Image 1 (tube, one colour):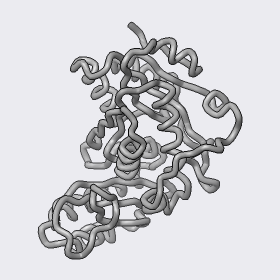
Image 2 (image 1 turned 45 degrees about the horizontal axis):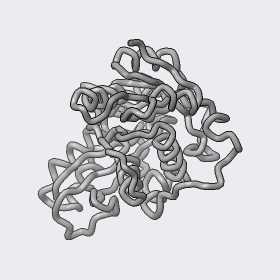
Image 3 (image 1 turned 180 degrees about the horizontal axis):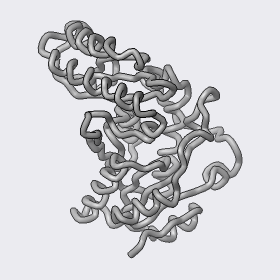
Length: 282
């Protein structure tokens, strides 16, 4: 059966009909990273975990700050629907802003707390409140039993998992590993804004993470130093932050910490801001 597109809440709920659904929330401009989420969601159907798969395509204004260009975000709706159809998705939910927020800006919101104001949240104030609010709303609209996110957006993945746990939501959260180009660059909808020279320079983010991981047995100072050494060799890359966090809390680790950790990196390449991360063990 070809994918069916629903533009309203009533229509989507009618299509789902009370069946167990895996939800793949996106803002469109789909790449192979998104399609890996779709593939995993389809696997959940074959495993009997859910009955159907729905993907949402909605550029959520709540997660864009006043200095971020909401209108600049790439929109490739027809191509996106064709990709989701080929991936075996059952339904695409593509609401307007008015459908999602019929009464204008929401008075009731989900807050991302302290972690939500760090790292990406420091650079993009209010971003994660907007993310969690729209994810919560989409889960309620679809009555989702499972939801899928990519590991590339590590802070987002952590905060969604914590929201589901804190609010006792009956939803299974699946985190799918980052999909990368052969060069190591993490796939992102923003990569399309890089010119050829910037695209080559952007590969340094994953190279820096590899250097950090290879130094993990020597402690956090060695991890940071190794990554910074690689980054300094690329003058087209302007570092925003480089941090090592405890995956259980997403808070920075102490100097004497030992155990699983995650290295986070954000940088501007030309006018394009990119993020990436890697799991390590200190």
